[in-house]
Image 1 (spheres, rainbow, N blue to C red):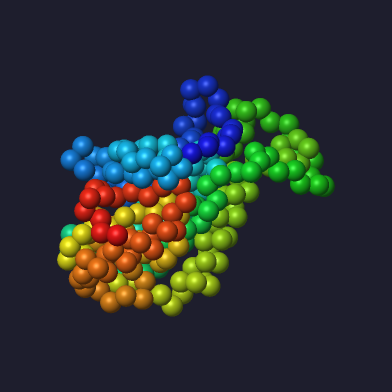
Image 2: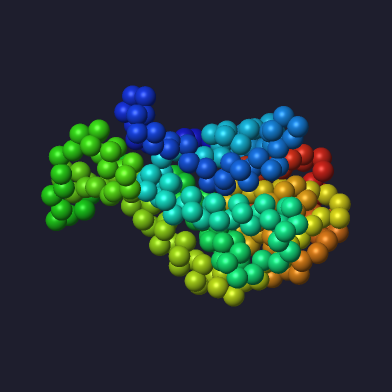
Length: 252
């Protein structure tokens, strides 16, 4: 996968800004790990299959949205959904309703949008009519780490800041327009395991190798043939990679 450029932080990254930004959370990837904690990854661009850890760069954008987004609303969405996922896994949640449905909607929209906006075309965007401020890199990073948006001299915005704002708007709009009436079913495979795409197309959120949340589907067990149908549609939508616990267990 060709890696686009990104703005590197100061040496040593003293503000601890997040550089590797997961598109699908590391905690979610880890649930598909084998005994060594790694998943089976099919790299479509290189046409190879390899093992990958949840922190592998393939799963990450590199500073494509700002720290305000990463540590703010994105983390809130992820944390709320991980509580739902854990509850489904341990059996304390048997229905995705109310706040749990909202958390799932928000999470799917977050994953959907991040996967489509994980690369920046440019690193700066100039806005006419704004003077901006002459800031040192230390000042910029102090502002960013505290959740502020800034404008550089000449009306230049770091593109990651605008991407973070646009993602927040797109997530909100997607939930309202596409997911407002969605009911999620808790779907378990009788046989076989699910694969996970890099770019979700259908409203399916894999939680564990044999467990997914599926929109407009009743909760319950599905056959190996149903799992294969889901896997085929997920594989077709994938652009650069897809992964699973063990591809030999994933019917297609």
